[in-house]
Image (cartoon, rainbow, N blue to C red; front, side, top):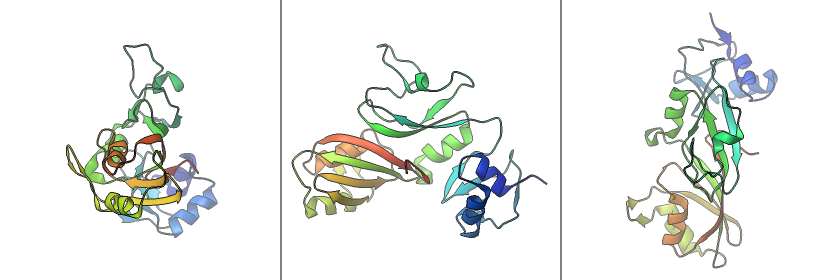
Length: 211
């Protein structure tokens, strides 16, 4: 009963069926919490499919847009100041909503869908879905001590942050991964260690990336 798992993965954009078979063989795909095997069939109405721990939608009546949000576009359905919204950048039908938010000055990946269950799995903090950012900061290269503080967690006005994964591939450019979703969190974390963010780009949401 159901559809073959590799066919569904291919239909949702993970690559050819051969590529999707390799994902399954590598143990990166699970169905209802159990690691999937080749030949597994899926009930698209009831089964939960995850790749690298992040759920994906497999029902054919759902739509999913992975948007590269530009600076200046707001993450709302309507804007009282007549600014362009992310909804303006995708087809009008079927109606979709954004999964989480990016502030108006932040660029990068944003998922829009009409799949409420998937949206909750990705957006709710209890599921710990990672978000990765490229961060340009003012003030020159960030010191080893500041990077260590970000990795350990920093105190913000709404409490300590969870430890982050941080590297500095170029002076003044960070690759930072968090799994929380506080308002303007990355900007506030960098400011807490003395560096103002000049550019912020989200590059990954769970297994979904811009690469």
